[in-house]
Length: 336
Image (cartoon, rainbow, N blue to C red):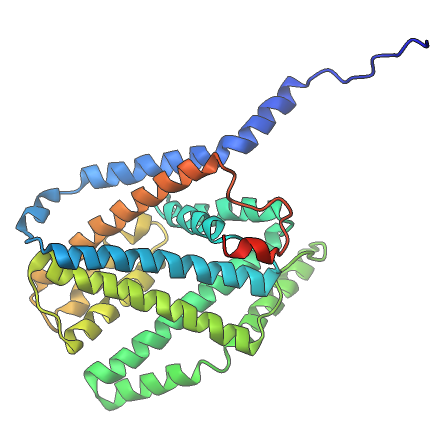
């Protein structure tokens, strides 16, 4: 028998460390943001909660509504990745990515959750440029749907000529939505050419008009359900009585607060900005102190839900649920 030469390559300690870091960095990211959220919660004056009156049927309804909100938000992101990238995320993976982005808003700049999500999308063959365009599509749909609902509610609640004109404008804005996303794609391609970037590969497709309208409806539903959660906290913690007009103002105030808080880049989670805008809007239908208390209750509710989400996806990390093995569209996994 011929002597066999041992050609095995000795292990590279540096490569092993890099491999380990690649596996655990997201977990470290989640843990850091987890403690930031805990620190925020600990630093707040929770004594305001002693002024609330608990109504458990409404608390239960708000909890169920929040689960529906999580499900629909995960579903819309999953559908966006399918229609734009032919990427087959399961609902669990979509939920995990949604929570990652949510946690990232507690870091200054608010983009770090999107960066973390982009790193995992890259494993599925989506380039970083493609991730940026996909995120732009997501933000465009979220802001467009927020403007659509806000404009319609203004027309219904205020019933003044300027409010009706606003409602008409947002209704008409539905149709050029695809043109707007096309403009973003063209602008990015122009800038990439100016800076001599290589041609983009594995980038999102431009959504068709029907797909854009479907996703716009989905994100509008997300806003409405989250507004419903906010509205249910009013009778749940403050003993208030809901009616259609008050419900409309609560949904509108919640959308305006979150949307404007989103642009406060260096206010982690939009802290302060969101509560201010929401409370000022609600002074149309309730005293300022009541509006402020309700806004703070909602803030604590949201923080608690985000802590719960971070715990859930931390447990799921061990099961490698973020991406399917193939990274391509697999209809058998979509309903998992």
